[in-house]
Image (cartoon, rainbow, N blue to C red; front, side, top):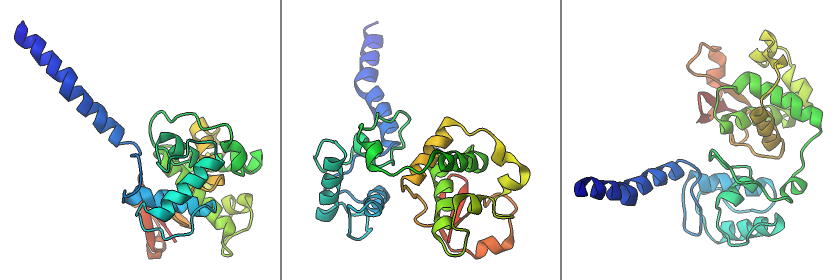
Length: 231
């Protein structure tokens, strides 16, 4: 009996915290001065998009990144500590945890969401093309469509891009007309607010499916979920 109690105590004291720690580490980690890695690049890229950061996208959390984070936090009603924790990740639109904290009230007023019809149209595309993809993969598909709007090689409206003949399989097979999930709507809003996990990609495809040989001529930027993204 004493042994069983001792074993249970050890599980509570050591094993359970380790499991919880592993779960948390699978989400976005907390960033601060001296941190390096891809997630730092994600923050730098987003802050540059929104005019807070003018340094290199080098994945090094130094003085310039810290200053940009503090400026962003101050403008968005967050605690100004220069640390990218859950609330700052969420305000940046980059949180990947299962239960993201509620963003500050000022967040919606500091990012320019497009008209509701654009949100719904983009959400339908995201739902049709990336329903089974992780959340960041849904945002990425939306970002590709918006990158095309900005590119001189594609139509200059969202509807024009989405309904361009042969551009998206979901338009051809009719899945574009399905009602989007709330997650797809949220992903559309994040994409319209400027989150681009693809860093400017204009194409995406599933390398595990049969696709046109031409698409493989596009330089691949990144892979998110089952999609690869290229320029």
